Every structure is written in C-alpha cells, then in structure tokens.
Amino acid sequence: MNALDLFRPAIANAEAVDLLAVFSDAASVGALRSLIADQAIANAHVQTGTIDEAIRLLRTLGRPPRQLLVDVSGSEMPLSDLARLADACAPSVSVVVIGERNDVGLYRSLLEVGVHDYVVKPVTVELLRRSLSTRDPSTPARAGKVIGFVGARGGVGATTIAVSLARHLSARTLRHVVYVDLDLHGGAAGTMLGLRIGNGLTELLQEPGAIDSPSLDRAMTAAGDRLFVLASELAYETDVALRPGALANLANVLTRRFHYVLLDLPRRDGRGLEELFDVSQNVCIVTDRSVYAARECARIIRFAEEHSDNRDISVLLNNPLEPVADRVHAQDFKRALGSSVVHEFPYDPKSLARAENLGEPIGGRAGRDGFAAAIERLADNLTGRESAAPPAWHTQLLKRWRSA
Image (tube, rainbow, N blue to C red; front, side, top):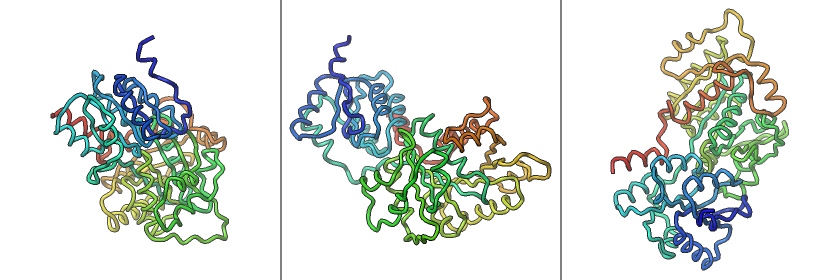
C-alpha cells in the first residue's frame, strides 16, 4: 500500500459533500483539515491524490459539490488533466486550483476563464481561508449551454430526439443535464424517461423572485445520477399565465448548475418561440419530409432572423413514418434552407417503440445508420466538435497556458 493511501478515506455520505479537495501532499491536506475544524465546515471531504482521483470522486457523487480544490503540481500533463476535470465538473462548482508555479499572468488567465482562484504552494490555513471565502465580482462564472427544441409541426418526434439527446449527454459524455418540458399540461418526456411528474416546473415559472436551490431541488425529478427533469402535469382546465422573463430567469439559474439545459417547446406560438430563441445558444427545429413541415421550418428560421440575435440553428430531419415515394427529399431541404445545419434521423420504429413504451434508452441496430448513431452525431455537433459556441473555460485555459 502506498503511504498516501492512508489519507484516502471513503466518502461517508456521497449525497452531502459540499467541499471536495484532492491534494498531492499531506501538508496541504493538513492545512485544509485544520481550517475545516476551526470553522466547523460541514459536509467536507479532503484527501491526497491526483486529478484522476478528483474526477473519480466527482463521478461517484450524487450531486456536485459547491467547492472543489484540486492540485495540479503533481501532474505530468496538467493541461490535458484540467480539460478532463472540466468535463466531469458541473458549471455550478467553484474551482480552486493549487499549484507550484508563481506566475501573475497565469493567475489572471485562470480568473478570466472562470476558475475561482489559484493558490501557490506552500498552502497555509490563511491562504485557504481567503480563497474559499472571497470571490472577485469581475470573475466570470462558468455557465452551461441552453439548447432549445421545437417541432415544425406536431408528431415529428421533437421530444423523442430531445429525450434521447439528454440521455446520451448524461450517460455517454457524463455531463450534468436538465430537461425542461414546457408543455405544462403534461408533455411526453416524463413517460419516455419512466418518471412520475408533479407540477414543479409551473411553480418555478410562477416564482416572483429569485429561484433558490431548495426550491429548485424540490421541483426537479431525477432520471439518473446526472439527468434531471423539470415538468408539470396540470389539469386541462387550468390556465397558466407566465410572466414575461420567467423562462429567461429559470434558464439563468439552471445554466449555473448544469452543463446542458434542454428546453422542449410544445407549441409554435410567437411569444414562446421568441423566448426560446432569446435564451438558447442553439435551437433545433425538428421536421419531417412533408411539404407543410418544410414550409413551417422555413418560417421559423425567418422568425428567428427577424426577432432575435444570432443563434445557431440546426434542422433535424426526422423520419417518423415509413419511407415512401413523393416525400420531400433531404437535399431539397438543404437547398431550401440555405446555410442551416441539417441532420437526418433514420426510420427506426422498433427501437423507438421499445424505448418510449418501456422508458428505456434507445438501442436499435448497430452501426452508423441507426437512430442512436444519429443522436451521437448530433451530440458531437452540439458539444463543440462542429459548433461555433463559445469554448468552455478549460479550452481557453489550454490556449493561454500553451502560450505562457
């Protein structure tokens, strides 16, 4: 057994860790433990280890910690290690990096990309106290990405694609995801995920003030370790008048806590579309091969160009019905819609029926021509391989550190 293993106790309550720290040396561990004891900090876990250990712990927690201290001084490849850490770390986590390099330029660069603080060894109780208790108001907070979904017409499979994407992002890419079903009278997302839905989303949208963490926790339904759902199932006779800006307020709160916020808009009314485009970095318009859906898809794109700032728009050409002759061809969509990105989803009825009715992830045939493979390609696009969205903090960090 390595001597450092003596300092690696198991986390007693994986649901209740607010402060998580992984240092490479026992002296730093001792300093933080002294601070924890002195200030009676509850729900803290500190141990020796590497960034790999920090990543493993983050992935075993039921919810992300509020604060994370991680040591890069013992890493042979700190740049790639920090990039991997960012993938496992929810945007809500306040990250403090510990290192041996005393460089003012590096410190400023870390603050600019959203890291809370950079502490140079040797670590002392006072250094840790200041780092954990203060925050520069000018330091930008990391924020997740909002992806909106709207169908060009009913029955084109917008919710099916959005739910499948949410499952992929949480299970395959290990991101923290929240799915917001904006059909307040009972959307299909809860059933597809095998959940019983209350009215938590309506309560949040009608909240007149700021949304606090306890209210958000009560409103959300867990669909997995990293996937949560906000939805409502109001009685049909219940009318809901949402105040202007309610969706923007909710999205602002959620992006500070999740990597991805997926908004599923059930109707193409003007106000709903405008708010969806206002809060989303990427909007996915789901359509089928009908002439009517193609026409409505073009109208939605024109609406976006006229009523909102520039947004990345992806057209998802779905095939929910058995292919027959005389439907609009995929190439015709691409020519008609110009520069919009078009992703095509295959006709895959057996795997989709099983997934929807049993509340299971989509399986289907292997290879690159199935529905699950199309979801993976869409996820690759939306998570940055082809997207023009602003880079995450660790991407900017890599560039700055390479040039330092």
